[in-house]
Image (cartoon, rainbow, N blue to C red; front, side, top):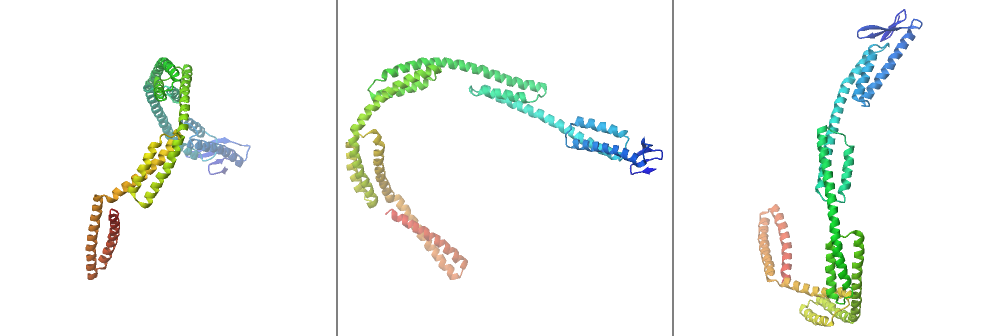
Length: 412
């Protein structure tokens, strides 16, 4: 008789496997040696053990659904109950038993995941319905239709939820789309009506603009063209093909008038060129006055000299339009220098500020005198800590006093 840890071969060639319930015959190989018989039935066990290991791994990794896993475990367990093999059958049974709680947990997890997906789908459909209702209550005719199409495609990708909730949300979503579409059609119908009205107004404006294009009353006609442009914008768009043609005529009339006006102004600019030369010479004098004021500080002399230049400036007359900004800017800079000098003089002679500065000096001098007396007393007592404290205090106050005296002197 040949034996192993999990089975034996009887003298007649019968092979037995050891189980928790005792021995069980699994087969007979009378024409083979005991070792060959054990090896044959042990190989069967190894094959089943490999199958159990693979199933164990697939269940743990979640490759199988809980239903598939439970079916596979049952199938292998049925094989194990009456398998003709030699090995640790109890160990395989325990390994299959371990999968029961795992499958139960996975089943609960999948159930929870499904419930979460349904909840997420419901929340997402609610979100889509709310956005659709918001679009329907708005007036974004350009982007609203495109966005509603995108929302519909997003809706189609979501799973169904419970019928009552799904129907209620779809009703809201569909009603919002219908409401928006109806309002959009009404809007464009109204817009077509307004465009026809704009066509009538713009035809009248074009007729007037063309009538004014030969006018030589530059000021009043320029103002009237501004009014016509304002009315044109207020009229809104006409049908596009008509609008473009009316605008071409309107703009052409404007260009004709303003071209003639610009030509007339160019002639005037030529006439005013000599005035610009005179003003350039006056600017040299004015800027020299400003420079002298900054170096000497004689405000009265600067103001008197500048009055003479300013009178000549006014008498010089108009200059070409393209020179106005430059020349006037330089003149304003000189005036600014003189005004600044006047403001600085006022600040320096302001009696109220001077009095405050003097008062600050007096208070600081009194405080310093008091601190110096305390310092001498501390030195006499030998109180080094107090001496250091008072010396630091005095240093700061003397610095403030110096600044206060300087400020007070500036007002004198």
